[in-house]
Image (cartoon, rainbow, N blue to C red; front, top):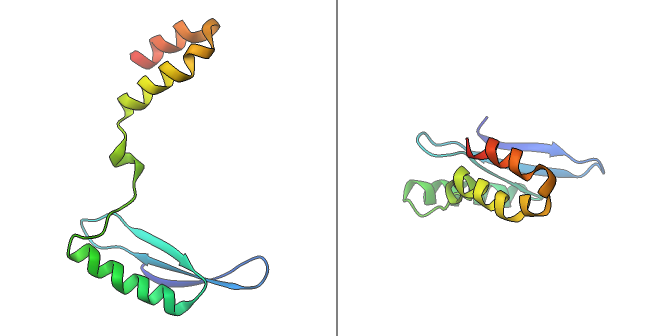
Amino acid sequence: MQGIEKRINKDGSFTYRARIRIKGNPSASESFTSLAFAKKWKRDTESAIEHGRFQFSSLAKKHKLAELIDRYIESILSTKPKNARNVKQHLLW
């Protein structure tokens, strides 16, 4: 669903969620307390995506699975010596 969605919070106030989906790009969304802010963000972000200026904040682009496994082995498994050998074999498989 693309566009601006009006949502009701638990306290009865409203939040507006702007969503953008452009073919060939990841989707982007943001929540606002004002409809005007949501419309402005949507308009500005669509323009930035089309001109290649928008940076999608995705952790998947920053980290590879192998890097995360190595980091886990170094930081977490070193504190669990009883199970470390077995878990390390599974992770490095």
